[in-house]
Length: 565
Image (cartoon, rainbow, N blue to C red; front, side, top):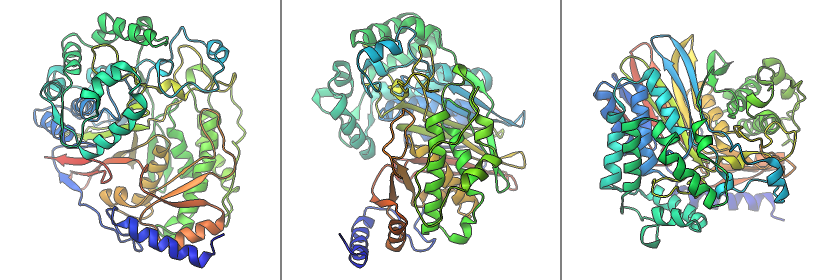
């Protein structure tokens, strides 16, 4: 067993070695950070410079924030296939400046009508596999584009999809970040013939700086551009998707695609120290953010200080409490009444807060209710004051690995998020939306737009949202600092698919927190240490009501780029 004094020396040594790879050095509240981007007329923050540039081009042509978001997403599906594409789902929160309100869109797809729980149980499955045809659900992205465009678009779809089509035909240079992720996913998905043919030309994934072309995707987007969303959900594309999925042993059909629809929903919120923080209701995990904030509101985080053991301890305990409820209650509301209002109430938070011991890491169970992965995030804003918080994903990186013949994209593996326990709210049912990790976020102040933001990364998303809100409001960081500040991530105490490791789970800290903080957390009973990755990807736009300007911030851990004009 390592003595604490020796452990402290070891932590200092590890920290010194790892900090060379980090982009900041944390001492108190001092860490290196990039400047925010500031502009008057429009702003775009995405995870890839090419996509941000396209978004700004669209805004300069007179396009709306929604137009810019769609155009950027189309490009990201090409240049960052490790996180998103038209084979996945999307969610959005839109600030409608004319109406002076927020609206939400749930563009997630449903499970195949012909695949049953009995079939999965007969196969002896305890979980739906994380790849392959059984994990495929209806991709909602394209329908989401057209729903958003019909309500808020200004330019024709041709203008929005042409940049992605051109990049797909001519090719683009692969970045170092994407090349590394691509290589990692291919090590698992290369067993699928069509995946290997599309994403491993010549038998290898593209290296940094290599030009990658995807003419199949160019043709697909061109047909969608000319014929609308029916080109994707009906006709030849739907038949091709069905044929490929069934060839690989899955059930998704052309009829499932034709029946798909997106839903406009009302965002839900809680007030955190005078700011209204907004998320979308289930089947996404956004209410976990609101639960965590409600719990944390009972503590003076600013007095403890950023990076203190108390700060990190409270973040972690609030997360564990909220995620236990996430595991028990978040599912498709079309298949049963969900206790959303109760879960995000201040009264419930006060009861859950009583379970936290300030001196000890805890292990919790869900509260009692009366019940009737990789990803891309982007945000845009236009000269008329409209703002979009937009998130889109294949789920686990490059999705299921099932690539419909000749269409140029991989289908998502979102179906693997279902629980196979009969009677569980998130249990598999044909035609049902699975539990979803995707969550866009928005903050308003006194009924006016303040910040549109998101943090990518599966279970990291709610944790990242809370840390951004706390950094902005409690620790008074600016928009870029709030994202560049070192993060924490907790996992292992609960899962939405029913798995539970027991105990208090594992707490990972990004480089930048002091060894003294680590030692204090260890004494509290946290299983913790430094880690180099998996802390999400952040983009944000803030509206300055006084000066009528936008501030943009983007992720320093990825290829993030915020641009304005």
